[in-house]
Length: 240
Ligand SMILES: COC(=O)COc1cccc(COC(=O)c2cn[nH]c2)c1
Image (cartoon, rainbow, N blue to C red; front, side, top):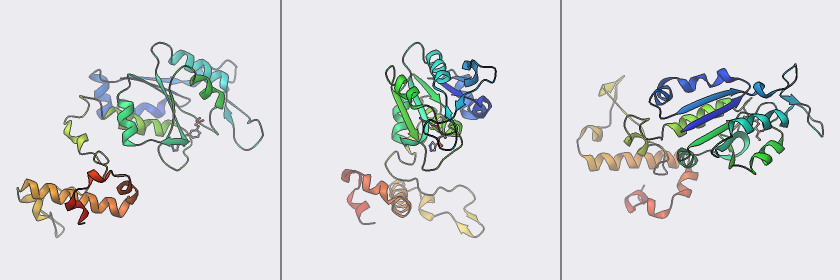
């Protein structure tokens, strides 16, 4: 997978070259390009923003600069353009799975009040454009959202995670939140690991884990239970 990021703060994306994602780059599973938007400015001040038509606070990112940047970065085989924004559709594990199937993602990092809408509308005539939200809050720019989205997507690529089984047991992969986990010692500050997990009875362990996941989902994210297809809940689940 190739990922390109266009931003006025390229250093913000340095963490993508660390740890697991850094290894994915070394293994050739991920090609990462980070581009400074100011490369496409054309005035002595390298201006990337201007005042909003219609007035109001803040600044809007200039269409000319973004247009040139996207023309160059998106040239060649059609990429999918991702624009993190509070006004986007929710970025979920399902969307991460969908994006993991793409061969080329380009991320546009907005700042200030956002990017001139015509940039999005123009790009959408040539490629798929997804405006995605990582949550109902406002960041100063898209860079942090790109870190989150790229990490969630790239960890799903074959060969990136040591043990492929680990993302099968992800939270959300079966529509439920992950339950509690434990490791040694058996007792820590007078708290003992649940007996069933040390029983070796795999059916009982699976049942216990499912029950804890259902309980936690019910307590913290009842909305996810609503979304579960009926078939997903077996009769033992319904007793909870
Ligand atoms: C067309 O889209 C744009 O112009 C995007 O512009 C902006 C402006 C300010 C901040 C951001 C970053 O995204 C978030 O704050 C965000 C994403 N998810 N939850 C919060 C993006």
